[in-house]
Image (tube, helix red, strand yellow):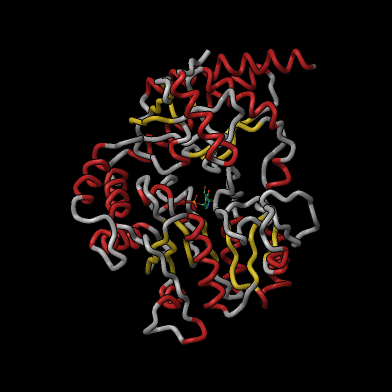
Length: 436
Ligand SMILES: Cc1ncc(COP(=O)(O)O)c(C=O)c1O
């Protein structure tokens, strides 16, 4: 049993008193599982009661080098002595923009934001300005941050006939439903037919190349590229998760499909508040008052856009990622964890599987083949929560969904985690037996 000190109990009480749901909006567990993080180092985090966890949440992805990586810490400490923010073009942001253009196949130019949400939002906005149309197509269950356009059919409360979308959060104006249409991920024929019918009114198609933990089926991204090119509709890859994770050039490098615009965030900010939209020169020119016509000039003002501290953290992170063997290691440990879970579930005859790509994956408690949002509805979420909660009691922290392996996870961490998996899957089996 994890021990909670009086100090942490008091902080938990304060969290619930001062923060809605006691959380920052991201991770909300029941009281029993809630803890307050005090610090992180490498692959580990510690709560206020000094309980240690192997962390697979990793800040929801940015901390691919691990917490407080020495190169990032050093770069940030050096930078902070020279000013925290300027609201005008700064050296580190220019250097990071250059690095993004070198790394990301679709990037000719870069516009910084302070989050992945804003990067996706900006990508949609500049596509609209460029195409002079308002409607966009996204995929059911796809997540592109918390803007009104992203929180459509994610998750839908009701399964409508495609392409009707549904506002998924209170507060999102219902009128947005008229501006967003949805298609089923991985179904290129159906998606193509929707695009063919709506191409004249579409400003963009936005997709996560790996939607949540659903990898694209062979031909899906290629088919999207083909149909959007045919109709001159900007294709946006949301690489907030996959960027610099699947490969240095992201999912577009990995799958060999180049979109017109890319939204990035997480890893490229090294754990600081940074995102970016990047892409084709002609589309990006809508930001440039010297090039854009008055009716398609896009205004984007942000106090912390391209913040120099975030930019140096990003640059230091990318430098580490360019070292030999990094991606091989990330894929290798992810595969090892997945193999272990898949084998344990098969042996225990628990209907479950891992899904995703090795550098970011999850366990889903279903035997159904997973291709799109609707197929994930067969998953037993109660078992997923139980699995997470039991794992946390073994000092392995996953977060509500997704394992994010990092370069800081040592072989010893992986061995420990595999042992924890074995214990937890046995407990899950006992639970399912007891409820049969
Ligand atoms: C695919 C994807 N896009 C966009 C976002 C939003 O990024 P941020 O949380 O930085 O606003 C997320 C966040 O997890 C994401 O997973």
